[in-house]
Length: 301
Image 1 (cartoon, rainbow, N blue to C red):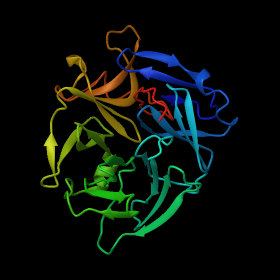
Image 2 (cartoon, rainbow, N blue to C red):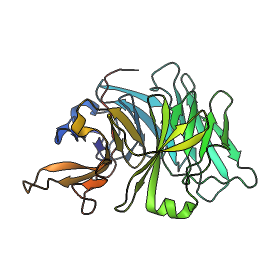
Image 3 (cartoon, helix red, strand yellow):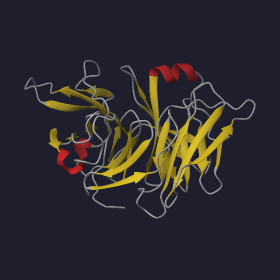
């Protein structure tokens, strides 16, 4: 899903499976305000969180033609956004947080269904606590929001006690934190009751994946997704089962290329976990600004 950043009346969808574009701009006409900048941040259950200007937050389901306004927020910069369930749901919790890579303070904004305002929380990391963000969205899993560090460690925010903390386990999977941040982008995803961490390089190198073994609270290396496919963008990712075998074990990137047979057709770029190669190629791709992967669902809540 791509939104024209200065016009809420225009957005489009691209289906990587069929290589087709869809213009659904009529569904959101009048929802936004003129030339105010729009930024898409997070998607789940068919809903998309969008900021408009400096403080407006809107949840939009383009498939159900439904929208929900959240209270104005006061966090000029944030590094992760997520919700437990779509904001219209009576049990919804929305989380935004900000933590600079080399800083020790974490600023958290929390909104719960029915609240008139966001709750502001500040946390200071204890002495010797090292946690540098991957600058990606957290994942709501088993009642808590999990945030991924650039070396592979985890932090959690528990809405039940409003506490944010870095976990002792799992241990980091990388030693060179700064190098990982420069060379790759890390994400978390939940799939079939498990947390999966993966790192997508900024250069032509293999995608690395790890499954959290909760019995040991340790990362286990993954080579394939078997009967599933991953979609990753600059903010977050989703893993979905794929009934068609030829589409499994792929990591779709937020980039586009052109078919290698010379017919000029637009295709979505992906990494093949079996062949360990990028298609159609890694370099020379187009990356649309202000875009995010969306899994179509028409539920209003």
